[in-house]
Image 1 (cartoon, helix red, strand yellow):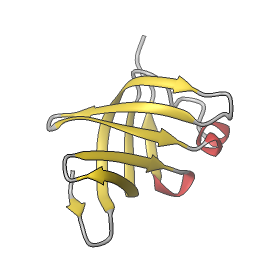
Image 2 (cartoon, one colour):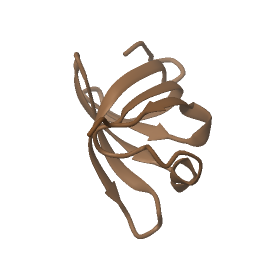
Image 3 (cartoon, helix red, strand yellow):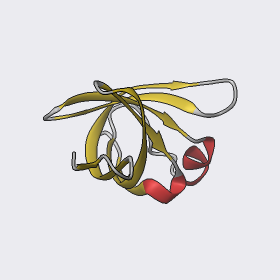
Length: 92
């Protein structure tokens, strides 16, 4: 992941959706895995309205993702429709 600390934006992310938990609001908690590790995030409910293949096992390509960092060691992605580039659904 390329991280620009001044803007708190990840330029590009390619990751496997390891865990996805839909909340009552329609938003979801997500765990994304890539070769560098695993990161948590929030997925806005509108993402699921336009992309029904966004689910566990999918590979997602994201750009310009906002990052929440409560401290120097923790990062949390905020995934919206604007940051979604492509979703590769899991193969069965």
